[in-house]
Image 1 (tube, one colour):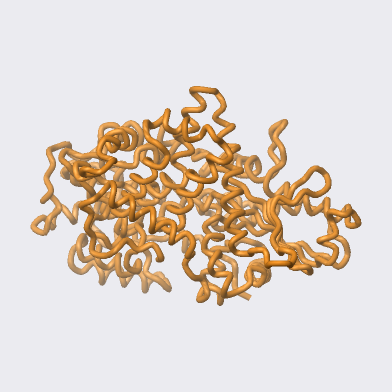
Image 2 (image 1 turned 60 degrees about the vertical axis):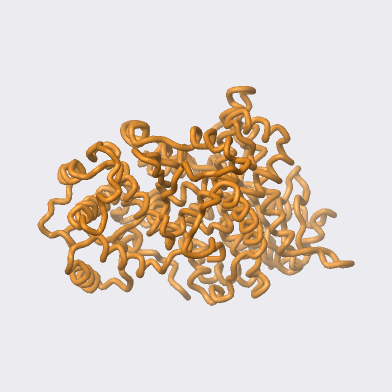
Length: 586
């Protein structure tokens, strides 16, 4: 059996600054001194470009990208010291020197402490190795600051494994979120396009009107421009997140629309200081960057600070713009969130329909919106006669200030409010609680007419399918399964309910075409056997299992993305040139 344990060191580790610069005192005072000698405009651009290089999509292998940046930024001999550190620690892989969380942290400090001055495109050029080394020194100090902010002492053992796991939920999620690469572009672009141009208007007909009131753009115009920008966030692109606003739209129909978009989604360094420091950062994290994804500079260069935040603009951005308008106009912002939950069910359900089409003249294995007793409904069920996969589909968001909430029960109470039983009055059970209620109802009414499709079912696979891709962090499945087990009644003799399986929409999108190569049931059974405590996620298990070689790109979403991004580049960036076509299948 594979071990589901993920050592804390494997999640938290990076190359510390003293390995490369042993003489440097790696503290905040040194960082401020270093930044005071750097040009703020150029250092902001350098942060954006470096972050795109390490976290953008369709780039070289991480090891190769790190080696490139070591050559470009670090002094001679650094590789020898780094390799000695890896050998001394007995690491089986090279830890990152430069990574997303570190570079976002550096950007945060740069906007406040770097020297304000005119644009100087040659500041980090080939003849300015000293400036590049200063940038690298500052970046490595930010690794240490970032690590303290995310992990602090949260991973220290208390001697009680279950308490330690609960304490690790927040730092595991935030650590992986801020050190990983941007999500698959084919999936996120197509998901956002289909959700907001098809499923959301079907569920909430006023959505397009509210969005246009809030933004002075149609949903399609907003998405086309945002999707066009994603072409600049390839990790192997010469652009590396940088573009020229004056080159946008040319003489196309978007010429008069682009200024509205830039007014909505861009900001300068001065505005960023307020958003990335003080109380607002403590409670909202990088919301200032999420809200306005473009940073404008002293000349005609603008940059995208983070490929992941840009992807979020496509996959959820329209929802928050329209919700803000609805809250002002009608006071019914929550209605839109409710409608989005239904639209997300439709999106995921349509994908399941494509995976399991009804055979002509035969009973379909997949059924959606199945009504059962107790006024309950199964979002989707894949019935293989002797086993059945029950899907509960849920779109919800954890508040930023809840993720690293160290108060007793802070994060776990938020998780239960979104995916279980809330401790607040009049809150209905959700997620895992709904799955437990459905199974309990099936067991209690086995002879009811509606229960007959499950009369021969011996194994039930309860799947919580979520919109939040960061629930793929370790231990979240373990916690949610514990909550599920508290609510589940004992099944009848001869019937088994496997432990809860948390599946993100990213997981399902990766499986849509791949199930032509293996059965979903076989994957879920292998995961259940290999990771009984659900500490390791389905995503990580699949990536390191025998199923990995049979995972293939989602052809349906690739087709949608290619069509939309081709149109976006033509309309918004007619002068766009790259070293390769925009790749969406990696």
